[in-house]
Length: 109
Image (tube, rainbow, N blue to C red; front, side, top):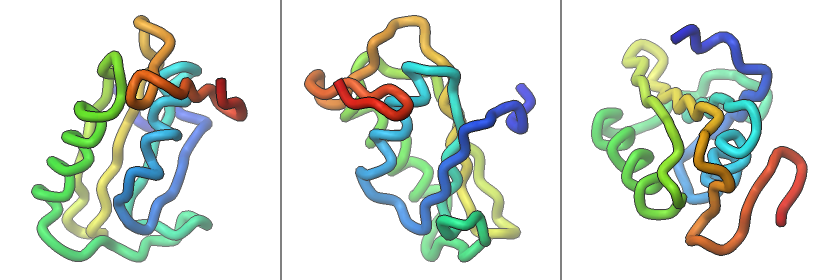
């Protein structure tokens, strides 16, 4: 899969549950990419800690909080100390956080 096809890219300096809204919206729309370890302007700041463990944390948060589970892929870049999360447009819409709020790009339902 070519990860450069996404128009929607979000940058996150750290990993927190805040990214789940974006992931849910991407799954409900056309997909997107979230890059952890980058400033809001897309500048690389890097993540501290074990990137493998951090990527497992991202995956667990998606599994635990988004229902149904959206199609996603996680990749680690050791050189830049960043993690890329690709969320594909899902086929089991709507995707929701904790089976309550539904997020679409630009909207909350």
